[in-house]
Image 1 (cartoon, rainbow, N blue to C red):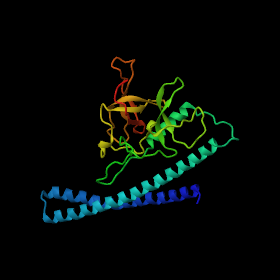
Image 2: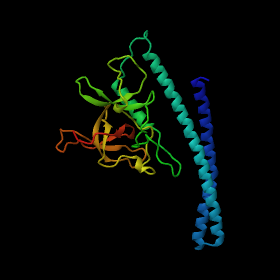
Image 3: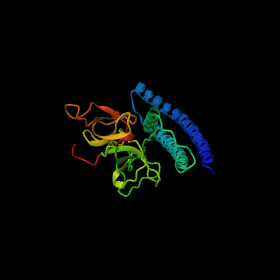
Image 4: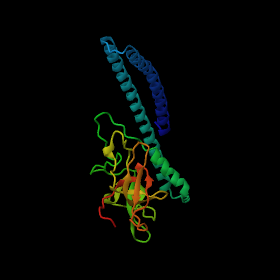
Length: 278
């Protein structure tokens, strides 16, 4: 089965799941309305009789079951979205590698800066939010959670990579892992020690605050409107899932050695292994 056919099938299944979610929600609204009316009658009568306690117990049991059923459908839908994104990424990598390995095609044009910055913003915005079940711990590469010690970056993974610049100094840059053995000025062969994988999920500050970097923690953060990571201190962490970090970049042009607070998305903030300030 081709990737296009599989994606089309998954989109159809996703559409059905969305319809099921709406049907489940509409069904549960009737029960929630009954709960509200029951509470209003109790307030009017100014008493909590055994009848109302029994009725509310049954209504809340049904509401919980409805919520769990809707949650199950939504998780199934999220799995379908993840499958679709994975297939699209595989197709993108295959097309990219076909272009890289072709000797007959003319050299590709360099992507315009504005286009690249837009793509980076989109990547940050569409990074999936980790939604675990009650009692689940955030997995590796969720927010500030580090990768497992045996983790090996896969083809297509976005990473912070430590490379030598033109002037010979080393710097951390945003990179993508590829299978490419020929040496050019835009391809680097690096050891695992010089690679830091980027988060694969956003952490929810409301449910998984332990998966966020803490205030004043030293990190590497992507400087706005660039593709380079620099050392920074966490100024404030996100308070909502869609929020960014506020960071203070090391900058000797300021009296205290740090820049004013700048916002950086969770996608582009990783742990810094060097503790000593330069």
